[in-house]
Length: 628
Image: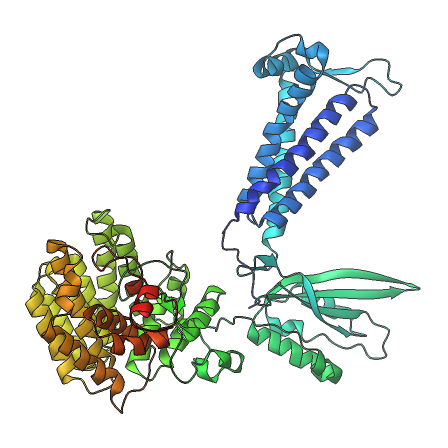
């Protein structure tokens, strides 16, 4: 089937700027209307009315184009504004601007009543000896017809704008000319088949005319400013003497990677010189439901998204939801994949998840694909495309969890408790379903620990879920992080039990695994408990105890100094915890090693302002650790 454009309905604040334009057009027209209706002959009056309505249509079209308000509803609003402005400007022209009318002191409702009673004289000038007074119900009916005309013109212009292919990334229509191919001498019978084509392949099969002298078909590709969306326009050209007669057969056909490739290959088979003229586009393809699954790693168009070797750079994500695990941080890979998802290729999220081979990388990418500021409309489409896959349900479950925490807030005192619990129930149901669909999945089961904590389920339930997660992945850092938080004293647990679980995870894990980070996490949680009781200075007193310092040093060495250490996507997070904990514990040399890698700024929350962890910044940490 041919791809059709469906607008998201997103509006731009710039949409309000069309109001002055509309006011000028309607006001000028209304004032002119008052002047000509009593003095102009019929043909002049009728022509001016049509011209005025056309002007409204042009104003609406341009306003919607530049404001990016692209829905019939927006056009109806513009038309309604014209309906209201028209009598208002007439009233201002007669009873406010005109000196004779201003002296009467009449209000707007009196103006309308007088119009209905006395009527409006039309066709009085231009040689006519007696005009025609339109009043009473006839005048009201005419007003209704005028209002209907304004509304229809507004909605029609908006509907025309809605059909154009539009890019949500750079907020521009796909109207830049990028590529063109002309196929000469085709049979005229092909034109009707192109107009009625329901499949893209039909557009590439015009019949040639034997003997020549047939019309020319022009295929033109247009794109947006950033090159992420493109459209196809097909025009027929007839030569008549020295002139060309052009007729648009199809336009605003949304192109995908697949259909663009078909078009270019077909054109190049007719004209090989076009191979050097391919348009520079980075279209986000949406695979069809019945097409074989395409691994992201095998897609030549997105090879640049493959993660680089070595340690990733931490990048701040647009989302500010701190639902769990400092989840608003991206790296180069997840930022690129999220950009593809935003541009419409939501299946890139599943491709990115399935291509991960290391569990730490898998956990990081899954969380990144679930972190959005609003409920993604494409969740349902993803599940429809992959009904047998547990991945979309896992991602949606994690999103619901974060969405719930967003409603509650991350402060000690909860807000919107009912909404928080409702969303966590949704998250728990989705994650349970994902876990049931994939017996070996450790990620859904890890996040079920977090939903258990938020829902206030008994600790044995959380422990049972935790054991199920680490049974499938023994070094399951997210599962350990969540159970550590769950057993913290602030969540109704005990710091002793929390530290016991953290030590169990570090003791059983091989060297180089990110699960050793939970030692730093647990001690920072314990320090926070003391800070709530004795004040912020107690954090350093707790962390600088010899036993605590020794345990932090040992966990740090197990993870980063062992010969088997290899960085993963989770490594950046681990560095933040160890850098902060070691610095506050007075282990400045060990902390300095991490701070040199982290750099002068960090998007991770540990070096931001915290109520209990202090208002320290990374700049202070670097200075005290001797890092320049």
